[in-house]
Length: 305
Image (cartoon, rainbow, N blue to C red; front, side):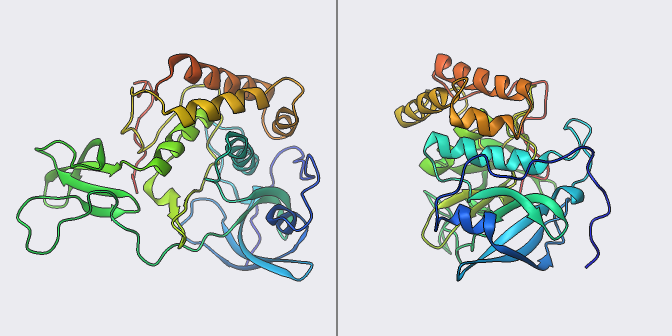
């Protein structure tokens, strides 16, 4: 497998800001021997499937070398791996285990992001409400991905689902794209608003066999301008649940000037990006509601799944 050719400008700090607890998954990802097993071909950047071995423990993981990142016009070159780690740190500070353990370290192709691999469940339920059983005449949501579905465009979103918007379907028709009214997705919607995620697609939602939801691919986050682009608009404008308000308050405290989280983020983001993060948390707490599309940036990523 040829190594990615592009070399990012400037140094990338890969040493952890604080020692990982012995025996933790983070310690395994940070200190283990990384072996590349293959490349995930459909990814736009270099994404390598690896194993990591440390003190008799072995785990599968994903390694995204900085040198394999494609330049983006609106994000500084060579920073996507750092943003992935920052997203994990912020999610952990909220108290939600929605992002798999993620670290920044050296690998076979230079510094990059290493994240625990998530084995998906064999079958993902359609979500609350479910798809119609065979022979049912009433239209129901038809699953198109994890926790996403297409429903009748002429009717309100079915019970247990939240409307995203209209989507064209093969044959020239139109359907209503919906996502499940699921507490796990709602937490993720709050997280995306906090980190200013500009690419929350259906394919970035993974459900493991134990029923836990995991969000992945957080490289295009933390921009100082409003770039929130997501499929999870179903709660737009509605009051935040109490648990989200509590989590946001916890994060606001963790983002104090000399707090450990702020120190870690300072090695991953610019001062302006950290300041914008604080502002977004404060704005969410002040409004007490889920954000609504701003209108200056496409609200839904394409393709959506």
